[in-house]
Length: 200
Ligand SMILES: C[S@@+](CC[C@H](N)C(=O)[O-])C[C@H]1O[C@@H](n2cnc3c(N)ncnc32)[C@H](O)[C@@H]1O
Image (cartoon, rainbow, N blue to C red):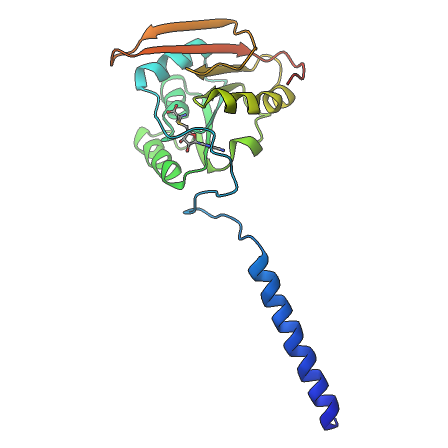
């Protein structure tokens, strides 16, 4: 191989190498366990539902062992864990905060329900809820509104949606309970049932 040809090949290799490096630097890295999801919308800050309110939410939903309870923004997992522990229901919780998912997994283990529940580091807005028979929410009103079209598109008729303190805009709830919790705070819980019609 002549010197000019060798020099040309070397130059081509250098250019190809630096183009790849620039491309991979420009790629957003996909979030993994241990990283908060920077791409996901913040639907609510972490404020756990007190246990007595969790109990009332699950009772309002009429949870049984045949249900799949999905908590969108699950925090420490108390809602699916209680549904599993008390009713034998299956459950899924998603949250964008890895610390919450770690706590939820530890709590599921302590409660002996790891065979029934699963927790995922995932954005509620992109979570597949088509298998849920009960959805639980403790998110801001604006976030509930963002979820409405997703829920109506995916949920099967008969699936119940139960929300703590924040309603669903102009959706009329079929049941509303307002009560004082064990800490003396007023709480409101709402229930809707999916009818298979797609709405906004
Ligand atoms: C008010 S807390 C409710 C926790 C739990 N559901 C309960 O009732 O105890 C809201 C939770 O939603 C989570 N969250 C906020 N934005 C989210 C999103 N885009 N996807 C999934 N979870 C989200 C927060 O990290 C927080 O843990």
